[in-house]
Length: 141
View 1 (cartoon, rainbow, N blue to C red):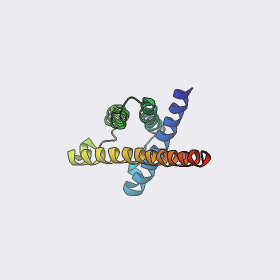
View 2: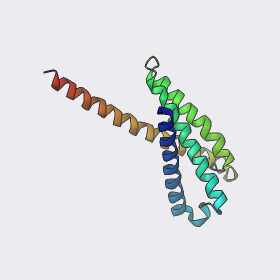
View 3: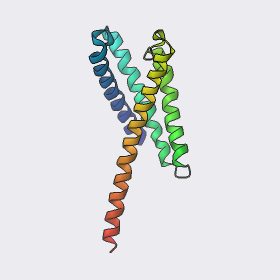
View 4: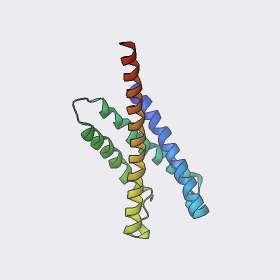
């Protein structure tokens, strides 16, 4: 049941990121950035969902308390990027025709966005733990 929930959450994240990327790309590059056909849109959407699943399902690693947070993060993000990069090359999300500088910039942006999302989750759960600990402390007095 947990894997199903994470899979659906990954699909939601993939769709959300896809929508934002398409919106930002369209604002910057115009119509040429948008998928040119229904088939292209479907392929882009499915690829985004797979990438979302590839980043969300591996969060199960955080339940392994015998691993350090750094190793957990390395495994989580490693699996996510092992799924992202082949799909990104296949889907032409990385602008190989524009030169390696643009490819490196695209990779940097993908890594930065991933770590921003990861950091936001970390801060949220850290705040939740503090709130829960505060409640426990207050009830023990």
